[in-house]
Each structure stands twice: as C-alpha cells, then as structure tokens.
Image (cartoon, rainbow, N blue to C red; front, top):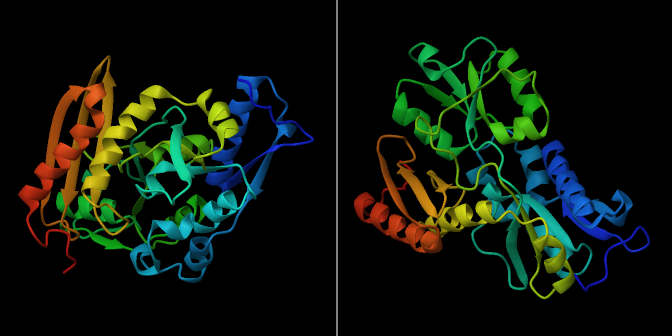
Length: 318
C-alpha cells in the first residue's frame, strides 16, 4: 500500500449508527484494520451518527417499519456525512442496505460472514412446533411474519420492535410467547444468556445478506479502497454478489417478503431463494447451483423465474 496510513494525529473516521450492535460492528471493522496494518486503535475514530430512522423508530415504536419509511431512513445522514468528508467509511448491517448506493458511494467490502440463521427466542420454548394453536408471536420483520404465517397460519403475529433488551422485556411481560433475532447479532454482542435456539436454514431461509458487515466508502477515495481491500472477505463477497443480484432484480425493499442464501463449495455456488405473499398464504422458492464466476447471473435468473411464477400483484398487501 502506497497511500498514507491513518494515525492518531490523522485518524480514519468510521461512521456508524449508535446502537450496541452497530457499535460492535464498527469496533470489529476498526480492530481488523488495525491488525491488518499494525496500527493502534487511536489511528481510527468511531463517529456515531443519529439517522432519521433512529429518531422516527423511537417515536413510532409500535408502528410497522414499512409505515415509517424505507431502508434509506437508516443510512441517509451517514451517507451525507461521507459525501461531505465528515467521515471516511461507514459500517452497516448489509441486510439493511438498499441494493443501490447514492452517486459517489460504493459498498464493496464485506467482513467474514457470521452465523446466517434466525434465532427462535423464548424463555420456555425452543421451536415453533411447541407453540399452541393461536399463540402470539412478535416480530417487526415482514419476511419473518410472512414465513411464520406460511408455516403456521394459526399463529397471531404482533409488531415487536426494539433492541434485544426491550424485546426480552416484552416477552417477560407476556406481550408475546416468542420472538426472533439474527444469530449473528446475538453472537456479536456476546449475549450467551439470551434464550436463543438457532433455526436451520432449511426450515426458515434468512434475509438476504444476513450476518454480514458491509463497509461503504467514497468511490474516488483510493486510500480507503486500499485499506479496505486488506480486510475484504472474498468468499462473503461472492455470496453477496448472488444474493444482492437476486434482491435487486426482485426490486426488494423493506416492504417485500424475500429470503435468500448463497453458499460456496469450492468453485460452485448454491443459491436458494424464496418470495412470499405478505400474508403468508403462498410461498414460491427456488434452489440452483452454478459457477462462482456466474454469481450475479444466477441471482438475476432466479429472480426472473420467481417473478414469472408469482404473477402480478403477488406482493400486494391485502
């Protein structure tokens, strides 16, 4: 690397939201960069940025996210800070990122992927099959809601937002019998005390890019590009190329129940995808394999097939 390395006198500024999970992900990014270039932590500055989505989510804690706005609500201020030079890079949960970045920004660095599975969270149960008919379950995810109702149409699903502690408190208060989180978040927060049971991906396919930290930068910032290249995980990048191509071709948003997972076996990539009616009444899935080099085309081709089978109005709310 020929570009100037960051230093305590001139630190690389890492932008992030302020939640415990967002901070854990920013710290992991900092620590990987520090280790890659043998730099002290003081060569990096974590810059917490409050987004419009954070403010509105706190005010409208009981409203579904789709009524508050799209995914950009949680990235707009961070991306504006990067474009203005206030920060150098931004750390995100990739599953929450739009498939297209604003002009001048790129999302092309991904850290090694954590556990991709969803977790079943309950103080006294370990699986959906243990829930009685008509049991109340809590989730704010449209994907999880649709998948749950598809597997168990007898369940009653209620809005369930907030951080891990808030959701556990709601369970203790009897608002719902169970809820769901990403295993990756539980692991990154070292929350071994959370009553979590991993759900096999054959039972519940996860959100696209679940378990992945993505790092965004200015497209013309060669120093940041050189630094981030040292911590980019190529295998995760190949997997997300397929998954995000699937999402992009499906015109995925936080208002669309879509699941997808790519896995690698040498030079072969397996991609599974699922689209659901928002009420869970129908699910359409596909499972394909191909060469890693064709990852993007596999995603686009799967999307075309799923859309042709779904037909017009498949994603409409009833």
